[in-house]
Image (cartoon, rainbow, N blue to C red; front, side):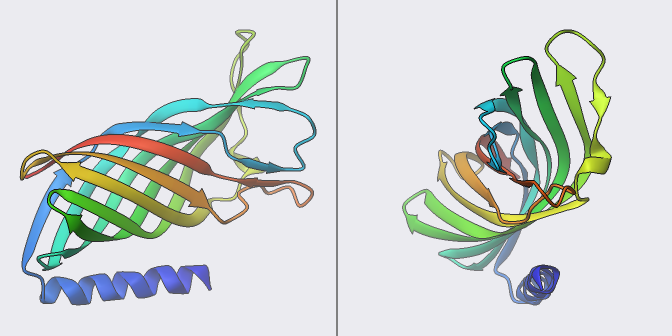
Length: 193
């Protein structure tokens, strides 16, 4: 069902390209602050993890106030954990593909929202003790799905500053007794050519 909705959005995207007023390409590197959602929590102290989040985008003008913006992003998200005995960091690396509807709500100010599909490249556990990292990719599902909400301010026709919130709705854990969902805020600086 989720994949059907996502791919329906892709079909709508390509249909809108045929009727678009303008197509522009851009880049938007930034930082993601993630912590995730865990059930059961089991009293483990979770702290925010900072990782890279950014990539390439295509801004497709449908009307002067409405755009569709597909992207391909490289994202490193995770969480720092302390169970009272050990401290370690869980890091997930994804290629994320959001499909955003972007609305110009005021001069230079845009709001955006849309679905996002994520494809897991790697997962690892890094102990703070200095021991070698452990590959834990087999403990997680290969895809993630969620919703992205954001805002951006354009300083010029080419440069912008943006922020986003990703709300993962899919359980990424392969363990049926444990639920883990990606959640993060990202801050980006972008350039549209």
